[in-house]
Image (cartoon, rainbow, N blue to C red):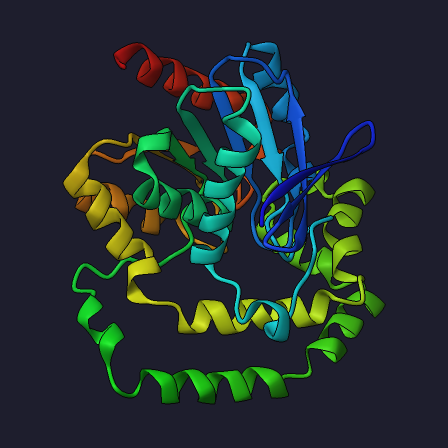
Length: 314
């Protein structure tokens, strides 16, 4: 049963989804064009702190939430959830729209996602296109395989493969890895790799990423993610999802990519735009993997102009 509970403080709301507590946030909650922000892997809603207020001031109703396993949301393990993948997070988005947004707002929603959040946005556009007016992925993390074969999902070896990966994941020393990362502050290393503009790597950003990873339940949630993303159906991969969107052509799609993204190089974005010409690609110069945080002014301007354009067309 899905409920919205009244527990609330000044900045954070909690919603019970399938028995799990989900943290969510809102600015300017009115009957305006709604935006839903989805964070990337290891991050949380606060990673959009330089963007949300800007869009709220421009008249949008701005929502964000911590995906299950991240931020202030619950961090279930394999025993509690089975696995965590973009299909599960897409279900979370769909029910969030139904339970939280729809009682107040009947307008179609623009979903804006960073990296993993972009993949979840794309998954949602395929799953519930009737609810969505457009998606912005910045960037899209999956590699593209135009020859992806979804018939492989029915292989008789699928269950064996799943159990083998589950065994492997259960044996991974994730608790020790997280301890080492915390002990030696290795998150700074990852941030330096992700961010081209090093001046934005400060204590606030470090705490934003590191504090949720110190929770006692972080390791088991990470196991569920490793299992889920390693065994997910081909139908949950970007290659298949983009093909579906290409066929229905009902959800406009904008890619915003950092010119110097080291995690997912710009060539991936250019390949997507070449294979799927209806996808619009915008490149932000001298930025890395988190352009919304490194160059928020330009990211906000590009996104706002594009949202206004698709809104006018509709």
